[in-house]
Amino acid sequence: MPTTPLPNPPQLVVAASLAAVQGVLLVLLAVLEVAHVSAEHLSLGVTTSVFFAVYGAALVGCAWALTRQQSWARGPVLLTQLIQLGLAWNLRDYPGLAVPMAVVAAIVIAGIIHPASMAVLADDPTGSRRED
Image 1 (tube, rainbow, N blue to C red):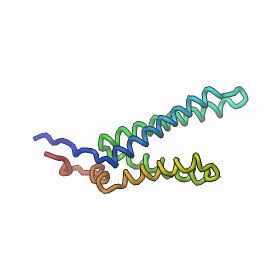
Image 2 (cartoon, helix red, strand yellow):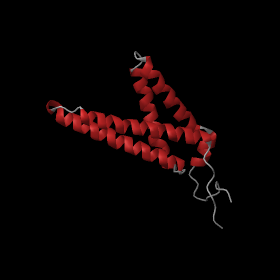
Image 3 (cartoon, rainbow, N blue to C red):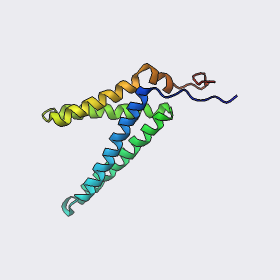
Image 4 (cartoon, one colour):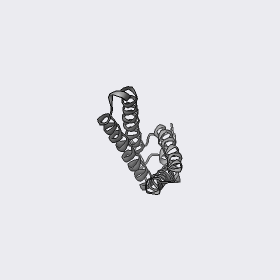
């Protein structure tokens, strides 16, 4: 008898959505970096752009995987949020940037570690966490 997956808890959906927005913003930063690459700093500009584009695309992919209840995506998204908290701390002299970064990171972390999200993302080879 086929089983259907448990519905995604709202906390997980919010966390995945915010992570996807972060990924899109990283891709946008990559495009902006390419647009401002100078001949003097060509290799730095290109490698920075490629890094932001790949990281942003990977983050969007992880956010999508979270909504598909893939537990492997939890780690990269949490690591990204921890990095973002560190960046927010470094930018604390610019509260207009640091506060939103910290708030978004905290919301994503809270959404992923929420017990309902953890239950849906738990590795379960027996399939017992699925609804019949």
